[in-house]
Length: 179
Image (tube, rainbow, N blue to C red; front, side, top):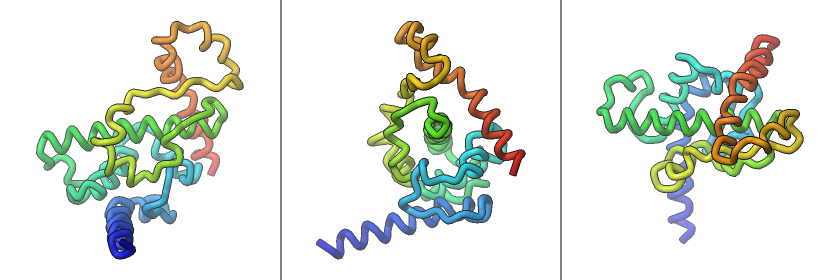
């Protein structure tokens, strides 16, 4: 039994090494199979949640490494189904990291994926996380616009949260600029 667990652990380490290879160079930080959204530094989180080519390339590197699809630079050469899966996982991870940024600001209280290793979020996306990819956490009662959120029709509350994304991006853009 110990041999099976050891093999599983070694496999997770190799998967993490493949996925995070580009991130080590890009962000000059340590990442491993245990790295969770809440473990990311403010600087790395701030860069990953920004729209643009830099974050897209980082997500492609990571996801394609975990999925054994080759180097992130080869994204455009993937088969359409693989490309769509990488894009679906990218959108999911981007949401989770933006929600993590909101959690750190106290805008949301509960984010179940904050404690799940990033490698696991990618590797288990089809079986465990795909069904929850459109889940949006509720706004914290501590947020200044909570009264407005509470008056919002329940079906529109996820859109209310998503309309806060430009604000969180600006907060993190300013943090990055200040460094």
